[in-house]
Structure formats: C-alpha cells, structure tokens
Length: 345
Image (cartoon, rainbow, N blue to C red; front, side, top):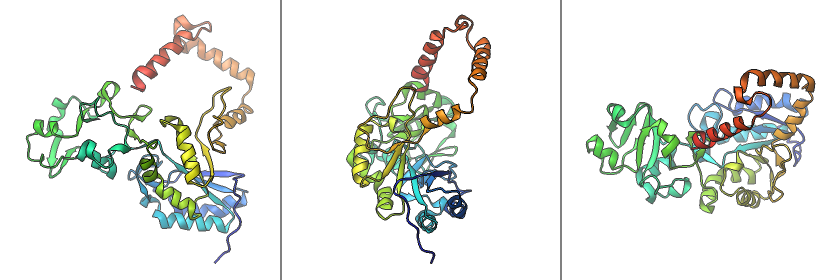
C-alpha cells in the first residue's frame, strides 16, 4: 500500500471538481496524480450527499444521511480520500444547509411531511407557513389551473400522480373522488404561476424546486449534518465550503454551531462581498470562497479605457429613453421592484 503523505491543515491551492454521474469519485481519483503534480493541496468537491437522480450539480440534496450512490457511495468517497492522501492532498466538501430538493418522490423527509402534515416528525425541518396556506403546502407544479389539469391528476394506490410528479396520499383517502381527494390532502397542487403570490414555504431565491430547511433548529441541524460531521471526525473530509449562508435565518448561530460540532475545521463560506463590504467578524470561518478576490484578479485583464467605451455603448441602446444620459435611478427602482415583487414573491 502506498504510504499517505501529510496533508496541510490549511489549504494552499484548491482545485474544484464538479462531481456528477458522468464524473464520479472514481474519475476524480484518476485525476489526483496530475493535480498533485501541479501543486494542488486540496480537492474542492461539489456536494457529495444524496441528490435528485441524474442531477449534474448535486445542490438538490434529498437525503443528508447518505453519500450519493450515483457518485460511488460512501465507499467511493473513502477510496477517493485514500488516493488523495497517498499524494498529499486533502478534501474540501461543499455542503448545502439552506435548502433541499422539493421533489417528494426522492426526498423521504418531505414525502412524510406531505403525507402526515404538521404532525410529521419532519415537519420542523422545512420552513413552511402552514397558517398562510390554510393548513396545506402549496405545490406549484401544474401546467395550468387545476380545473384544466384535473384529467392528468390520478390516484395510483396510495400515490397521486401528475405526469412525472408523485405525491403521497393521506391514509384512507385514496378511494375518494378527485375533488374530495385533493381537499383531504396536506398539500394543494396548483398552477405554477401561483408561486409568485401564494407560495407558503421559503425557497432558494425564486426556485420553487428548492425548499428552505430550518437548520437553526438544533434537532434539524443534527439530523442534516450527522453524516458530514462523521466524515470530518474520521478524517475522510478535511474542510467545508458552506453554500449560500445568507439564505439562513441565523447565519451567525449556524456557523457557530458548525464550528463547535466540527472541532473548528477549516471552513469557508459562499459569501459574495460587494465593494466596501466585509465578512462579519463574528463568523468563525477562514474566509469566503474568493469571489471578491476573483473580481480583482479578473480586473487585471480588463482595460479600463475599453470598459468605459463598452459601458457607453451599452447605455446608448440598453437604457430606457428617459434614463439615457447617465441617470440610472429609475432603472434601478424598476429592477428592484421586479426582484422584490415578483422574483422573490
């Protein structure tokens, strides 16, 4: 067996690998010798936990308790870690605390919530406003108004099907006629356009297919981070990259809890800092993922004179007539209203 080489506790050069079914752990392991020859200290892996089947990115997590089977499962990840260590490389893993995939047939916790309602043991996991929805979770999945789509909603045993969608039926309701059957569920399938005005769960930006997770709840944190923390304790994973901390109800509290639970392992956050903005000093992290630094590096390849010329051309045809001449205040107001009133509704 090839001996392992020491891995630096703090990364000096990371290389990101986008894992997917076509590029699993085995393929990543094959790239290790080459990356080591370049001086890379750590591999930065996209999310490794169970995701929607076929997902090319892995940010649509469906089960936090398992390493993704399509990538090679936990044994595949451990084999990758061994290969990396033989070449002196560590592993940094991307985790997604803010949301999960809103795909009930693949998400066991969500399936249970839709079947059992607020009484589900998993109801506390998801950021759902039951009162706003009249006691039902809004599911914006229909291609048109429910009346027009009723013919495509079919009970199949204890499952309600709509094309490729599948939803659990509440116990004892499968025999009911469709109108009564729908009324009896803990959810309400509706036209997708209604998500803008009636959605009653927190989502990732304007993406209704990603439902917010309440990691501020200690029990939810423990359930959704158990596997990752185990991999950290056992030395399979060396550090973490936190996806979208700004979406969390309490980023400070979350990062403090994670810091304690991980034993202070090296952690960075996907925090996009605008000009003049600084990382909150209370966050116990090593820094950001570097978008702010990348902006400065990219600036080295930008000719300021050329940038000004391009901006002038853009303003000459892209700005509304009333805004031409450099006054963008009205455009900014319209854009803000569009985002707040529609995209984030």
